[in-house]
Length: 391
Ligand code: SF4
Image (cartoon, rainbow, N blue to C red; front, side, top):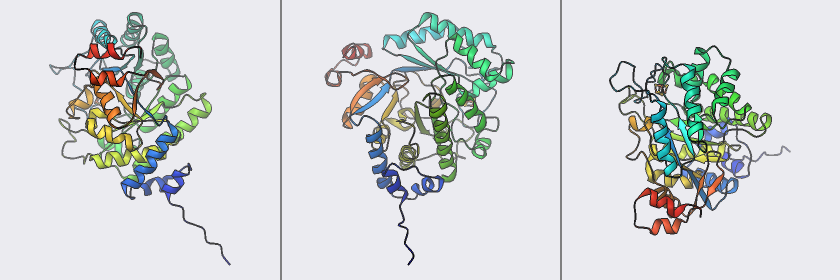
């Protein structure tokens, strides 16, 4: 008599903590979203503190909008001849950081276009200036696209370049430029964009050197489910390697959002993604990325309400207050491009979680008195911080 092999669905496997293969991850896209979400949320509650939702107080600073990569989905970049092109001087950057410090911020995300007129001295000088004037601020700077430009332009190996930037003050890399890490998708959306292999090569070197890194995903280019599943598998594979070979220094988290196409050449050509698709993809990411602890939702692209719903689709983190966002907002985004501490606290509390403020490595640095902050009538953000400080 032949024994029958019981069929185990991908969701059952995932719920038992087993790793899914590519076909199983792809199958999740065809299952009812409430079922997928239930497993994703259970895994989130097991893998992270079930009581808390975290966020960071930080600021995006885009030091230049001049860029010669010309991605079809980007409404932020300018050529140097355009009247509204800019490159910030160090004092201007410093003033922005002072504003962040006044609001209790701890990290800047410093990134810009690929500006061929900038020399290595501009980058190292910027890092040194920030560290000298703002010693408590962490600097996560230069996406893999910018690092690739520097590597090609300044005659240094990747290792030498990262050593030089770290010596000047670099603490980590942003995860920008991930989008869909499948070159067929990338070539159509942005022919000159950094290829997937280079994105991973640069993240790998950064992880080997102990730098902070984060993985990202953007959906809505018209990519297939198989390409989305492959994107997740490549991140999972890199994370396995980093956790094994680099003393646990892998991606600190995974952040995802939907493509915004307003004011871009992809407007009307790329399908984008609905809230349903976003939440589905987030839940699948939580299930597939069994080695990435923190899954972050994106209120600048999805809005506060979808970001709040995402807390029941696998997300345990609300990203950051941001103070300033220029890239997603240039292409549409949602109606808000900064959030106050109070707003993020309200999202977490109303969803049934305790809000905590973290640093960029997802370590909790403050447990704000949410009740006091929410009951306060004063809308002044600085007063808001005063109530929250030290609790
Ligand atoms: S996304 Fe980045 S690399 Fe692409 S055009 Fe915009 S600024 Fe340049």
